[in-house]
Length: 132
Ligand SMILES: [Zn+2]
Image (cartoon, rainbow, N blue to C red; front, top):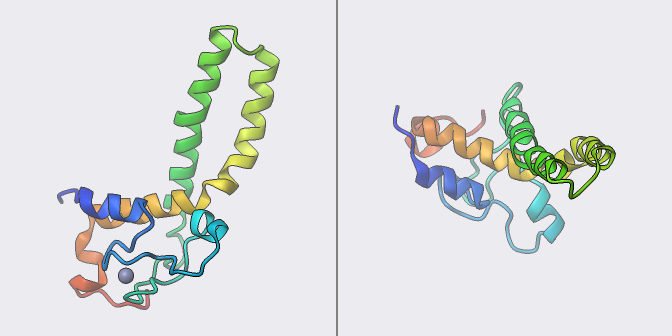
């Protein structure tokens, strides 16, 4: 099992991990482009939102981005007395509830990229069915 960084970065940039087409075609609003991952690739028809349980990977990415991206910054600010402890706690709680909504689409694309980068034989071009 070799990691394929090209597939990961392709997906993280909002492109199809299989055909490299833009997963949000022209005419889609910026809001949808940033925060939404469509059900299928517009270019090749590959299912991007697979069935039950597949979303758990995007939740892990979402949690990881906040836990290891946002919270250490807050701790650093609090440790250097740039913000008070109370404000750090308030910002952390608000971040924990609000940020997952805004990074959901990005976390989903990171998860698709992670999955197919480790398992490129699962891509439709490698013979997997399109409807799963
Ligand atoms: Zn595609």
